[in-house]
Image (cartoon, rainbow, N blue to C red; front, side):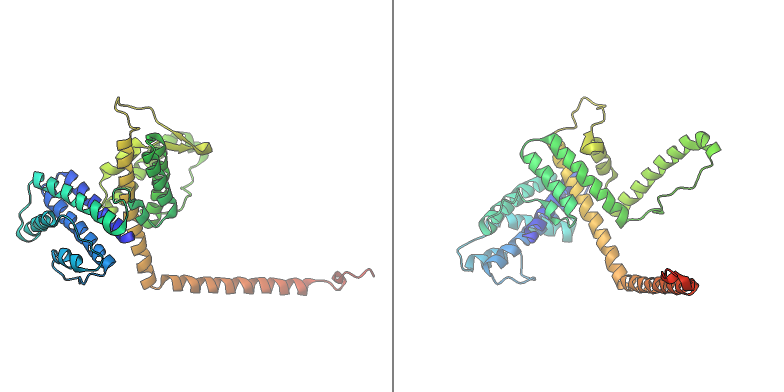
Length: 329
């Protein structure tokens, strides 16, 4: 089922690409849509045992699946053939489709994905959650709760769960991308200077925190506008497991179903990008032998500590007087 969720991820990436509005957004969206359709067709072929190889032509899926046992067939052959032709034209010939054509391909691909998911896997494609691709259980669970709140038309509760998810993502981002020294203790300020420099230190801290966040987002290749959108949309968690909603500066409500749905999508993207960087870092550490070196250092430290404890015990025994044995004489 994870592979079907990845199809959903490709589809959502195509939607986001089309919404981006840059000069190549229509062509990039069509290319991602074709990837999603082909990935779904491949999974459908595997589910019925159709003889389709990794290098099979795109339209072979329709022919070979229809000949496989079970009597199932892939839908929308003509529409998906047109989608594939648009993708080839963009990728190989530099011909970008018109925005209106890309929107038609998007609608057709969505129908194909929904119908194929239902027919071959008995799952609701639109109801599947990309949050299930996130490895961190705390972030994943908070997002699933947010999606459940959306299903219940409770935008406020959904946004509160989004805050919990974003807090988890920010913790992951700090561990995955270390921008500055992680020592929590700042340089000590003399007491007689504290009153004079306190406001300057707070100003520098805020500026540095903003710079640190910008570097992290740049490393993850995340649009900063997405992150600021989250902070303008979500409440802050305060003591006693409660949330604080800052006073609104606009007559436009920030507590809507549409805004919550957008926040969920942005947080999923953030989490997946941060997890990828974190896993890459762990992979490189393993390749470099860091875990073995850490284990060796720990063994040396434990050995040294045990020697010190043994030497201290021997010293105590040697310094005891003959009467320390507890006799009453």
